[in-house]
Structures are given as structure tokens and as C-alpha cells.
Image (cartoon, rainbow, N blue to C red):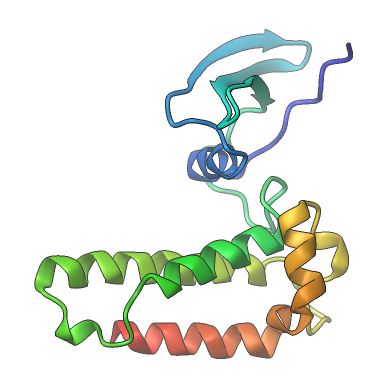
Length: 166
């Protein structure tokens, strides 16, 4: 069986989010191995279905890379953003301080996820291109709601969520 090429993450946080979205348990291990082109990080874990899985990653750069993710597609970022924002009530002021702080953190993360979707839009385009969706979940969302990936729609939603934080 041919070994898959190592994947590249822009940051450790992105790498761990990728593993979470892939359904790996939180209890996972990793080790460094010498590969043909240098060190690779090997993550091993179990999926929700009980399968043992292993993925190899190139070293994460010291400074996070700009540009769109190579691991998490635009649809996955959008789904995560929407889920986080939906978990926040429309009136943060009425929440007790500890709940308000937690809601603000989720909303801040939702905005950061929307910012990740923006990274997929080429400078001369108004919408995330179809090739930015490579997972089943991402392709389904794009097919069902392509307008949700318009630059103007994303910007309006981002402004609304940012206004909730103020």
C-alpha cells in the first residue's frame, strides 16, 4: 500500500481542528519521524467509528502561513462559523458575566472562521470558487447555498456578528 504524502498545516491550531473535523478522538498521539525530505509529524488516533488512523504532516511553520487552508475547505470553515454563531444568543448584555464571556469567545471564533472563508476568494472574484470545496460537507453546503459564499454576503454577516460583540 502506497503511503500518502504528508499534509501541510498553516498552524498547530489548524492541524488539530482538521483532526477534530475528521472525527478523531481528542486522545491522540504524535511523534516525529525522519522522512525522505526531513522531519514529519505523525499523528495517530481513533475515529468515532473505532478505526485506528494515522496521518503525516510536514512541519508547521514558525509563523502561520497566509492564504487559504490546504486542510479545511471553505465549506467546513463556513459550517463551523455558522455553528459557533448560532450558539450565541442575540442579546449578550442579558447574560451573566461568565456566560457572556463564553458567548463572546464563540462569536470571536465564528468571525475568525468567516475570515478563513474570505481567504479562498481570489482578489478579482466575488465568490468562493467551486474548487475550494473538496469535502462532502463543504460541497453539499455550496450546492445548497452558493450565495452564502458571496463576498458581500460574508461581509454583511461578519459586520452583524462584530456588532454583537460591541
